Length: 111
Image (cartoon, rainbow, N blue to C red; front, top):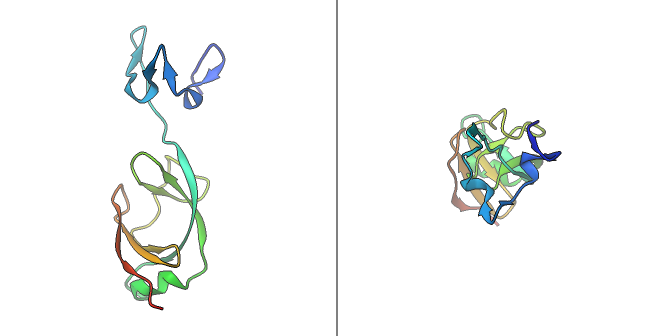
């Protein structure tokens, strides 16, 4: 993993007062920014075999979610393998994920 003075790029938030996400190169060397993922427990339904509401009651899986883009990833695969397209739920709200970056609410779980 690339580093500056032994510090992993992914652990840097500011560089000389500039937000790390705004840094595109250092000394002419291009910088890539790995996603910063947060674990999120969500039930899943593909919406084909089971209705979207099934995500509300299906056993939750802890997915990785990129906090800057909203992208969902397979657990332990942050920035590598996207989660499947379908419906996800935290037990209250149903979300749709397009398999790339769009993660948005589409309804509420039935009571």
